[in-house]
Length: 320
Image (cartoon, rainbow, N blue to C red):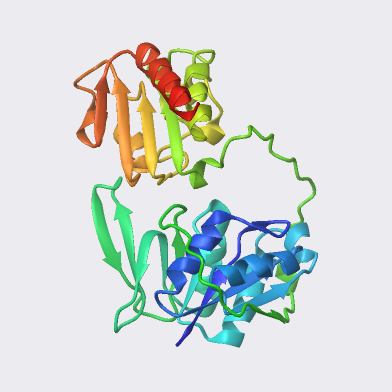
């Protein structure tokens, strides 16, 4: 069976969930070969093998941390040359999409971004995408070269499938361009204790109806009771009620959780573009004509300041 390269997203060797999802999807079209760049490859290899990697290509060069994305692109190109894969899969983060785009240009191949599903055909891998603010679903394949595909987090559930996970050193020769942009400072993100927004299985978002920064405590309380991430609409972010890093929408982050709860959000097309692929959508809004109710699985017409605390209380009661 053909091999499929999977770029490993990790934090000092701790493999992040989107990579495990990619390994699961990769098994549909071939044998996954994980490419781990940077420190921590020994510990990561065990996890990658547990989720189906038949081989783990590693390189712990300092360039991956000290410089911008180009060293990773050149390492993936070296892996591509060594393996001749059926496809290259990359997590669909901001960095992942830049890496994928640069790699596709270098190897002369087509690219598909923000896939939400993946399967195989006689003509090669086929990716499913949600397009035009998730109003349409398309199935696409690359007609030239080896497909480079970025996949959105939460597009599938990671499944354990133990494989050999043979670790091999990946030889990489960095060009002058790889060290052209040096990272001079890193500021650790403050931990909220909540899941990463784009990776969370549950997201609770607040919008204009929250009516103030202090009132987001109501949204946070529900999120914490569910073990969820907190999101915000553009209106709430523009008003300064919540950080831009938590914005869900066309100009913010795109999420696809198992459960999305929208409280006090009207459902403008800009917001819908960032959350419409969620598996189950619940809306709480006192305006029964709000556009958000057009796409929900469950809608609650009522004041969020009555409904959300009651829902939080019910969750805590059932947990207790």
